[in-house]
Amino acid sequence: MLAFLPVPIRGPLAFLLFVLNTLLWCAPLYGVLLLKLAIPRPGWHAFHARLLVRIAECWIDGNNAILDLTHPIEWDVRGLEGLRRDAWYLVSSNHRSWVDIVVLQRVFNRRIPFLKFFIKQPLIWVPLLGGAWWALDFPFMRRHSAAYLAQHPEARDQDWETTRRKCERFRHAPTTILNFLEGTRFRPDKHARQQSPYRYLLRPKAGGLASVLEALSDRLRTLLDVTIVYPDGRSTFWDLFSGRIRRVIVQVRQLAIPAELLGGDYRRDPEFRAAVQRWLGQVWTDKDALIGRLARAAPG
Image 1 (tube, rainbow, N blue to C red):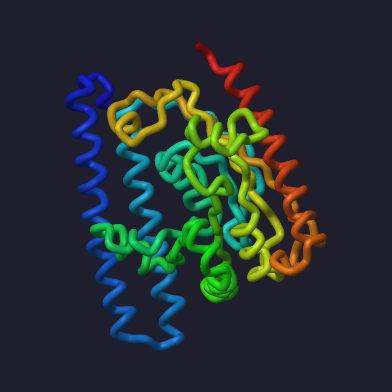
Image 2 (image 1 turned 30 degrees about the horizontal axis):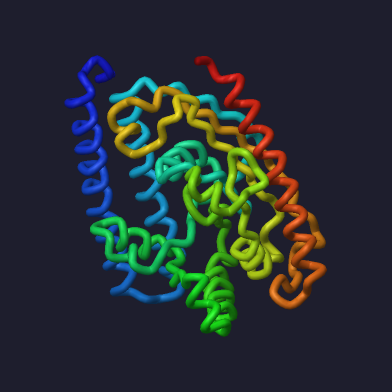
């Protein structure tokens, strides 16, 4: 353990180790990617995909080991019983910061199929990681603003079709798709602007989840409803690297997706749309209450 080091040293050291771990595993990952592009045969595609996922899982193992080495974080994780690597899952979580991704990867790595999530198209240019996300078949999406959609309503159908097409590739092997229903990280100003009826959450956006349910209606059966709480009130990457995050609480609920919500037309069927929103509204109400209980029970 390197927790005895002062924060001005420990923070940069943890960051450097994360970078070195990324460089270490990006080398074989990009090598397999080049091989995949050089031999574009259908029979090889599945083999390359599995190999790329194994490399990514080792990268996550390295990140976890670095956190254990540099920071004495207390992990309180519950609800992982019965998870399988040969099933399709839809994961939904509250969203406090991008540290949530590190937390979710730690919790689910090698327990369920590798986590994949929709990424904004410009992020493909992020050094090293952008290409890695592309190699791992993370779906890249163009996000349109509300103002743009008001002027170009046809873009909504284009986005929906893009989601359907990208999800089509996930039908052939067990996959986990992560969706942050709030659509953005929680901030008090956003909460006030939305006039959210929840105390600890922004309003959930059902459209993205509904499009995945429609595209994979014959595969998805379980929603993993994840609640993340940082009792210290700190959740930035610098907080993580410098050891200011001393405890992380993660609770997972395995919820059966109601059969009536699989295969419906969210865009054109108002009754179906209302049913999806009611279901997610109840999930969000329960999550808001759970966050309150966990926050009150946390020491300090």
